[in-house]
Image 1 (cartoon, rainbow, N blue to C red):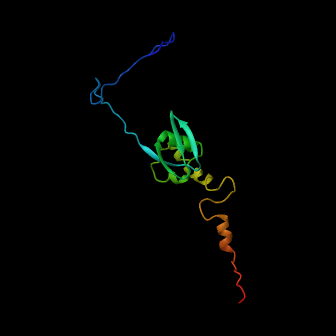
Image 2 (cartoon, rainbow, N blue to C red):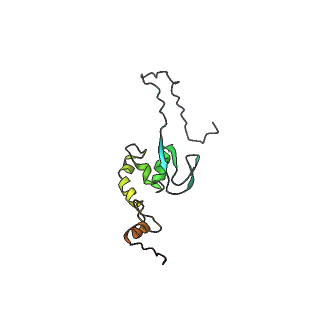
Image 3 (spheres, helix red, strand yellow):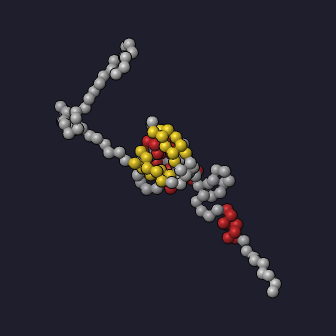
Length: 136
């Protein structure tokens, strides 16, 4: 450790080695890391918790829950990765998923509905298409 600042006490606690018991009968527990599916709605590069990430729009990536939570708050997640019951989000974020999906249902640039056929498809489908036949 480096030099200590005056007036600051430092305590160092060490847990027992894995597999050993503490005096109180507790056992050392090492959690398993779980990764969650992330699909971003645009290309995005960032540094989160000391790790560098480069996300490509529409491509699957598997990240820790904290990273997914940060991307959710930044409105960078595609709603497709919010399906199912285990999203890796906090309970207060889970309660906002429906609003998140609704916000991302429309293109922010042109206002098109992203959940169904495009505006051009609807116009083409409702119009009668005529072809010009050449006189023979």
